[in-house]
Length: 109
Image 1 (cartoon, helix red, strand yellow):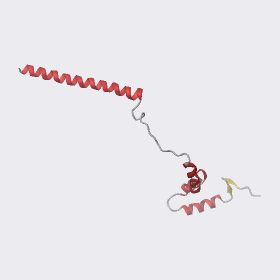
Image 2 (cartoon, rainbow, N blue to C red):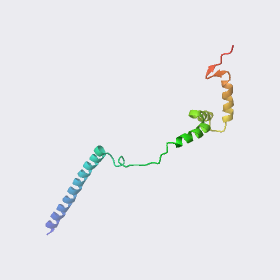
Image 3 (spheres, rainbow, N blue to C red):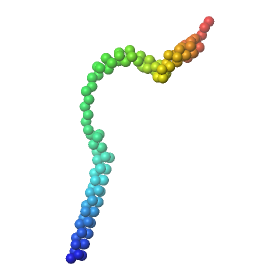
Image 4 (cartoon, rainbow, N blue to C red):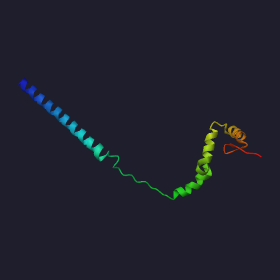
């Protein structure tokens, strides 16, 4: 009787282990096909956005006013720093650039 119980338990354990291995192999195959052939599910998800192409024309004027054409005012402000000494740096740059025209010495007669 004890031998029969041991044999039945062994068969049940083997069946569950075999089922787990089979399920793991099937899962690996389905994941491989899903991710490499069909693509991950995130790729197939569709998104919709409200987009108004005319709003950029309205915001362009505000950007030019605030930051200058192509951000030239922003670049100047970043170059002066954010530590509160921007007035001193701006004055130093004005003195340094006096007599120069776009990085070149100004030709005086």
